[in-house]
Amino acid sequence: MTSFDDEEADDPRHPEEHIAPVPRISVQAFCETEQTLKAVTAAGEDRRLAKAHLTAKDGGLAAAIEVYESMPTPNVIVIESDGTRDILEGLDDLAGVCDPGTRVVVIGNPNDTAPYRELVRRGVNDYVVGPVETLDVVRSICSLFSASEAIITGRVIAVVGAKGGVGASTVAHNVAWTIARDLALDSVVIDLDLAFGTASLDYNQDPVQGIANAVLSQDRPDTALMERLLAKCTDRLSLLAAPAALDRVYDFGTEAFDAVFDTLRMTTPCIVLDVPHQWSGWTRRALVNADDIVIVAEPDLANLRNTKNMLTVLKAARPNDRPPLYCLNQVGMHKRAEIEVKAFAKTMESQPIAVIPFDSKLFSTAANNGQMIAEVAKTHRTTLLFQNMANRLAGRGEVKKPKRSLLEPLLKKLKGRSGRASAPHRKAS
Image 1 (cartoon, rainbow, N blue to C red):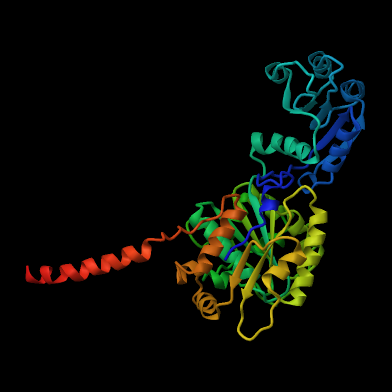
Image 2 (cartoon, rainbow, N blue to C red):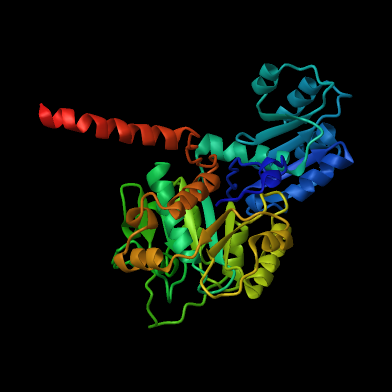
C-alpha cells in the first residue's frame, strides 16, 4: 500500500532534521585545511545560506586576527583550529579586534584540550570538531539564528504535479489537513495557482482575499497582513487562497513570493505549497527552497519522463538536502494501460512515498462536497496513505496499521457461537 525508500531515509547525508535558513548576513571563514575550505565554499551554495554573503580564506586564527585589525567584523566568523596553537590564547587575541555582536563558530581539532566552558566564556557561539562536511557548516551557521532569535522556523513542503491533472492539489490539500488534524501542527496551505486554484473549493471556503493580495502588495508583507489574509479552515489549518479569476495575467519575478514565505515561516510550524504545473523562475525557486518536495505523478510514460527530469534537476540544485520524493496517484484506473509501480520505481532509482489507488467515487464525492478524504471515508486505505505521508513529511514515523491476530477469525467465530447460545437464556429471563 505504501512504500518508502529505506536507504534514502537512513542516509546520514539526508537527515530528517529541519534546518531553517538564515536571514541576510555576512559570514567569513578562515580555514587551516583544504577539506574545510571546500566544505565551507560548498556551504555557501546551499539554499539555506542563499541570503548570506559567505567568503572563505586560508590562514585560520592568525589570518582572522590580522584581517580584523584593520576592518570591521562580519555577522559571523568561522575559525578553524589545527591544534598547533593554544586556541584559548588565539581567541583572546581575536576578541581584541572583534566588534560587539559578532558570532563565532570554531571548527576544532581532536587535539584541542580547551574545555567547552572556557570557549563559551570567550564568546564562542558554537564548537564543531573537525573534519567537517558541508552540512555540518550549514547546520552550525543556521543554528546561530534559528535557535537564538526564532527567525524563520517553519517547515515548507512543496507539492507539484509531474503533469497537469494528476491530482497534485488534492494530495497537497489532504496532506496539509492531516498534518493539522492528526499531528496537531498549526499549518497553512498556499494555493500558488492564482488563475485556476482549487484549494478554496476543496476546503469549502470563499475568502475575499488571499495570496494575490500579499504578493501584489506595494509594501513588504508582515505578520499582521498575513493574519488578515488567511482563511480559517479548521482550528489548526489556514488557507492563503488563490483568486481563481482571469481578470488579469499573473506574471511574477523569480523572488516574488520570497517575502510571503519568509513571513509565514516566522509564525507557522508547517507550510504546504500547492505549486502549479509549470516551469518558471518562481516555481523552480519555490521548489528548490522548500524543505521537502513531493512530485505527484500518474503511471504513464509522460509522467515517467517528467518525474525523472524533475528529480534530476532538483537533486542537483539541492545537494545537501534529502532527495525529492514522489507519489504515484490514480493507480489502477479501469481499462488504462499503465507502467507497473516496480518499473516506475526502477527508473526513478527510488520507491514512491505512496501509491494511491484510483477511486473516482471517493475522490469526486470529497471534491464536490468540499471535504477531505478522511471526512468522507475515515477508515479507507487512502486515508491511511495520507496519514503516512503527513507523518513522513513532518519528520515523524510511518503510521502502522495494527496487525491482525492469526486467532482473530477463530475468536470471532467463538464469540458468535457464545452469543447464539446465550440468546434463549436472555429471552427466558
